[in-house]
Image (cartoon, rainbow, N blue to C red; front, side):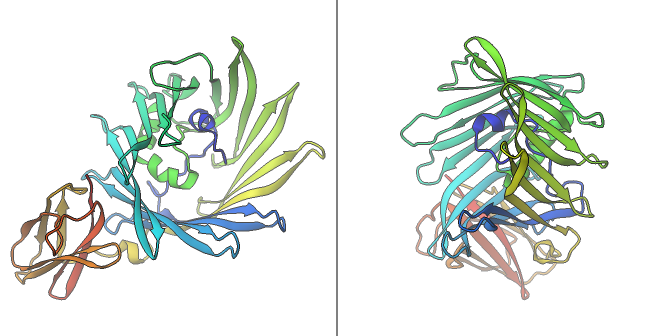
Length: 422
């Protein structure tokens, strides 16, 4: 749902459809565009656009996403920032770097660090500003053997003001699915009150999800889905109905209800939000449509006109463009005969570089920054491994950020992205 309410995002188990970008499917998202109604003419206008690029060695893994926003005068799409992903040896997300477009290049804004527990479940996510490394957002997940039992996140809206904690505790059914819970906010993590949102939810008869499947989704797909839905929701499965009650004056009062509909292929087709007055009445509606390949290609947001008793809109629309992972494109090239490995990546001081090649010809190695400027030439050598001390050609330590190491042998070139962090 198109919501900026943190309590709805953490409680909103029914609000976001599961939309894996490319897991276990032959399709991957290439582009999605957000449209909004213009007050001037009442027409939908492209407002934001995200373009997704994929890892050359693994076409199902996101490499980077470019974010564009329409100029408020000309409505021409302008590049605003880029986020770049790094994976560990098991293929899990470990770092996301956000870079803002500035003066024809990129400046570093923030980095997201992801941590997994001993069972390879996503446990912690931290967002740090690159300027002073202050943590401005974090989220944490808690599990038992059956599934997810809770989560919390913390947001700092102002560098001078301590952030607010949002806490969710969930109850499970025999399948480990979330069937209810309690969500609240607190000024610090040590004091939890009864004030907040209590919710219960039921599932569609065809739902076959489980707590184990939800853990897998959170741990391996949620970061990619967040790029589409802009919210790290804990939602999963074919939820049919969710009812939220607010704790007011030592009593619970029903206030909001979400009802979901599905088609014959068990795909989400709509979510209707109801508010409670003397009776339940419609508030807003999200609809979801699919192409012939089963990919969601459009999501539309409507509001209910209480005067005429009709849906009005859409006032917001998302359009999705997909491509086959077997398509020949720049992001799924065949690996070169020369192979280059770097570790650790991200690195702090020293970067270990190694080559694998059947040729004994010398290998020329150079380091470049995001602007394509040569940072340091590491020379030409027949050695298969060496260490870069993260210093430039003037002998100065390079700044934190993203660089590219380029190796060339017998006219063949291979490039790896590397990230220097504190």
